Image (spheres, rainbow, N blue to C red):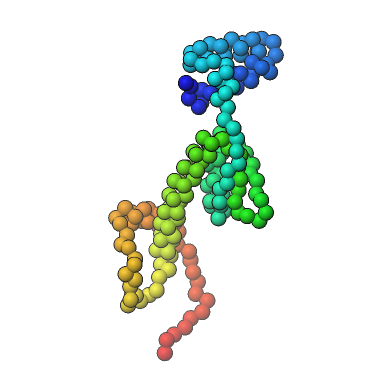
Length: 178
């Protein structure tokens, strides 16, 4: 059986064989027969390989998640535009996908969302560090729940810090402790 990419090409040639004009149609029919024989398929196999489309829901909480999901859908669908349905004021978006496409989008979305959240944490830590947004004094009661930062995480934070410019803050008020 042919892979997904081959099936897509075969379906395009099949459409051309159905809707083509003159020599275009004849060439498409001839090419389709050769390719079907090469991949040990019949015309019925090609027509039956069409998966049904269903509506699938993806809960989206932030603009970043929406952007990430949209990019993944564009990649999986190999499209430049994606349409969705939203019911009421819900933040859930419903997309029309085949079960195979849904599985791929769902897997990639979960994977990239987790990686995004990890990168976001490192970026926030780097931003706080590069701008020195910490109290001047040591914490007398450090939290026991805070886990130590690994060398790998520290390297990632330092790498992010090297690309950031500190924000220049001009103090508007001055105070003294008497």
